[in-house]
Image (tube, rainbow, N blue to C red; front, top):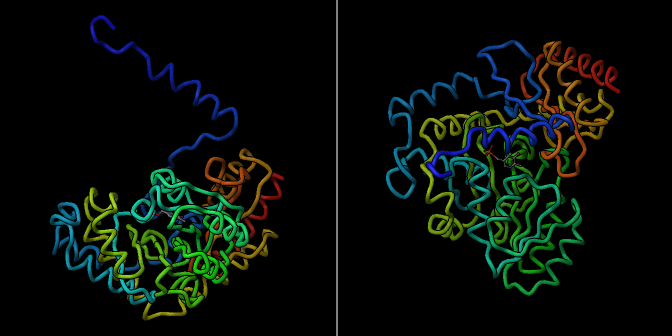
Length: 382
Ligand SMILES: Cc1ncc(COP(=O)(O)O)c(C=O)c1O
């Protein structure tokens, strides 16, 4: 522009056709602000242990704000590491059976940090086709050669590892897959990784607090603490807070402190989030049967919807298409039940789904009502 001004309507011209294209395919996403204390039965959130509003968790966060202030004040290497951070890291490592942990300000950033810090030209990354977007983005940022293998195909992982020229390799999997709700063959993956001198990285976002009596799938499989096994967890689901932690050998923690850019160049996790996660972890330690009711609820939901039982809390109900998915979710909402709807691009295989998340602490009446509502909605849209 001669006078330096941007042309009027530039973004409108650019973005309006994109929005129209999304609308035409039934793929528009909208934010729906929740009202505090709404009385919906929530089967969409990830508060699997029902601890997000537990007074012990809430009070721990409030006390931390009073003691430490509202934010971490700087990145972890400057003033952003408090004694709460290190207590959270060592408690979570001890609970899950790893030597050390390092907290990031989200699970997304934990995945970015560990994959990029281990990746590069000398590292092949072998990724399951269904890993979470944060791991997909981590692969892209890692500058590694990336081989995507079919879901849960251990043989394909072995082949990719055997045929590599890179000295190092990293295998990516989730202990419970976030969209499908199924489990990774962790024992076989750890064995094939070891056979080929590779590291296995397991994202336990949906395992921690849920499987293995809350300690996650890696601990349940007896793989925690092995020198070639690394775990990432989020604090934002069963642990009722925010943040993410990488768990593994002490030498890995040291490497991440020095090399993980999403750790180094990010303000530390807030003290309130650390304290809330610690309180949730204490409750989980003191009440080891708490995860049991997640599984009972997940089984009932899967039965009612006629789908495969989940390995964790996520019950995945394939739908005919994105519009039917949104319509079914709306029908549920109108009857007091909030369910998740996943559509492309959030589903790696392009199949739209209702995503139901089982939560500890639902009453029998609430569960009956939810099951009735969901099955009626499924019938109406099919
Ligand atoms: C499998 C998986 N990994 C990582 C994340 C990211 O965790 P956070 O929400 O703490 O960033 C999520 C959350 O959506 C997830 O489902």
